[in-house]
Length: 317
Image 1 (cartoon, one colour):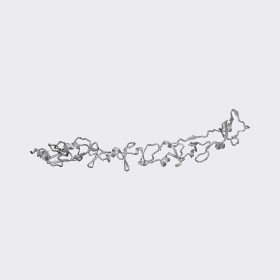
Image 2: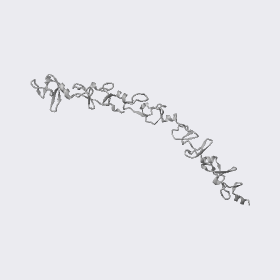
Image 3: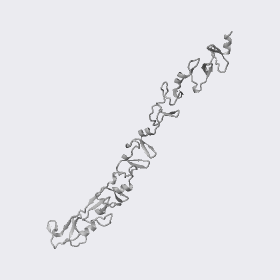
Image 4: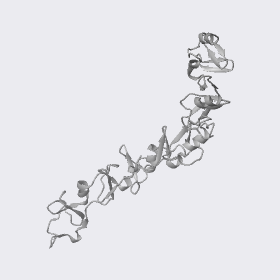
C-alpha cells in the first residue's frame, strides 16, 4: 500500500460567458433590430434570449444555450447526462462528472473535496478502500492505512508501533526478533527467558557452545582447570568433574614412566607396562644394560634395574 490513493480531481467550468441580447454589440457597431443575430447552429434568432459566444477560430460564434450544451458540454461518466454550461464540472483521468455525481461507489459520500482512489474503474473514498482492500493489524485489529509504516511476517501485518516484544513490550521495529509460537521476542528477552545458561558464567547461551556431562557451556568458558586453554575441539579428560587438557592431567595426576620420567596417560591408544609399583611406557620397557625391548619377554629385576635374560646371566658370572 502506498500514498497513491490520494487522487487529484480537476474542477472545470465551461469556458463560456452567457450574454443577454439587451446590449448586443459587434466590434464597434451597434447591432440594430434589422441585423440578423442567429444561433450559429440552429439559426434561430437570439434576440431576447440568452446566448453564449464560443471561439470558432475566426471569431466568437454565438449559440443559444441548448445548442451550446449539446455541442460542447461533456457527458457525465456516472449519470450519462450532459453537464450543462452552468454546472460545476469535475474531471479525473479523462472522465467528467457532475459535482453531485462524483461520489464513493460504496458509501455514496461526495468525493469533491475528499481523498479517494480508483479500483476497477470504481471510485472509492479512503475509508471504504481501506476497509475493503487494506490489511488489518493483527494486534489492534485496526486498518493499516496507506502510506503508514508497517511490518509483515508469516502472512500477518502489524502497525510498526504494534509489533512489540511479548516480554518487555517495547517496539521491535527493524531489529532482529525470535518467534515462539504466536509470540515474538526481542533477542535479549528471548535469551533471558528461554536460552540455556552456561554452567560456568551463568549467562545465556544464544548459539553454539559445547555440552559436557549434559550441561551447556560457552566455548570460551569450557577451559582446562589447570592451564585455562580452551578444550572445545580437542581431547581432554576430567578428575572430580573438573576438565583438564591431557598435558595438565598428565602433569598433575598421571604416574611417571620409570625410564623417561614423562607422564603415562594411556590416552590415544598408548600402552604401558606395570610391575610392582613401577610403570613404563611400552617403548621405554627395555633392558637397562643392552636396551633390548622386554615387551612380551622374560626379564629380571635387579634393584632399580630390569635386565634381559642374557644381561642378567652375565651380571651373575
